[in-house]
Amino acid sequence: MPHRQTDVLVLGGAGVDTVVHVPQLPLPYADSHMIRPGIETRAGQSGDFVSLGLHALGLRAHHLDMIGDDHEGDLVRALHRNRGIPFTGVPAPGGTKRAVNLVGPDGRRMSLYDADRARDSDRFDAATLRRLAADAHHAHVVITQPCSHALPQLRQAGVPISTDLHDWDGADTYHEAFALQADVVFMSSSALPDPERTLRDVSERGRARIAVATAGAEGAQLLYEGELTHVPAVTPPAAVVDSNGAGDAFAAGFLFGLLNGEHPRRCALYGAIAGAYACTVPSTRADAIGREALLAAVAEDARRSGRPGTR
Image 1 (cartoon, rainbow, N blue to C red):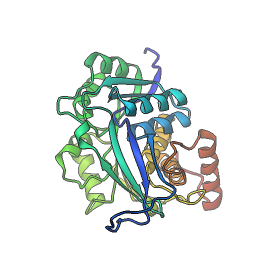
Image 2 (image 1 turned 180 degrees about the horizontal axis):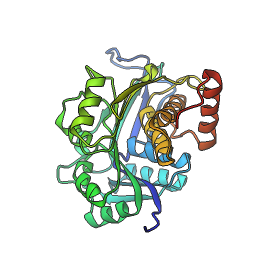
Image 3 (image 1 turned 180 degrees about the vertical axis):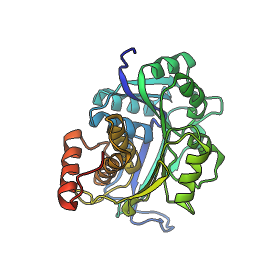
Image 4 (image 1 turned 120 degrees about the vertical axis):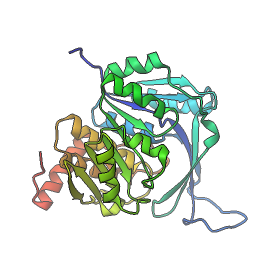
């Protein structure tokens, strides 16, 4: 078998956020608000954060997405260059994806995405995708344009796929296309009427052997081999300042365990620890827990709970 240079190929989710700290969410209507600590624009959307999280844990990540020849694209390229994460950028006619994140004092956030940046005709170059997929052990697919069109090619390449459906309602067909073609499915339970039912439906109708619904401070539900397990939340190591990127960190931590041969329940613990850490990172920074800190937190959790962990 040929040696593969990439542990995880991350597709999509490269972009720039403008972070706005607001006095509360929902934001009450007013002619103006004085904002402190201020407004800042930085690179870092879902695919960027997953790539960063994987890299911080010592995995070899390679990020592929469409970005524009614009200031936002320069910020994305600089983020990857400065962190030493390989990045392949395909020209995006509509420009680099961007969003505005409203962040409340308690760390909750509301994201406003600029939908004008995507085009229905956006596609990855087939030869580039084929080459990168052939060199990867795993592919993590963000649900941004044009990733849905890449799924069949990834399946053809035989690379296992994970995806994060974020705040899926369990019915939207755009999200469903990703849910049914992935081997590992992450989602938030925030918009799900019945998370267990959705997890089982995805597993029964699609390819998923592992499905996870996260619920913030309430932990997560893991479905594996037909068994539903509640994964307790992990207490953050510092004050919670921003929940943005917590789901991406959970996915990175989970994949770190999975690619190291851990049992899915232990992978979920890794994910919970990485997600809790992400909540302590200010929204204006792009940062992730490292391998040493993650494993130390796992050991501390085992000491306090009396659970040695499950392999």
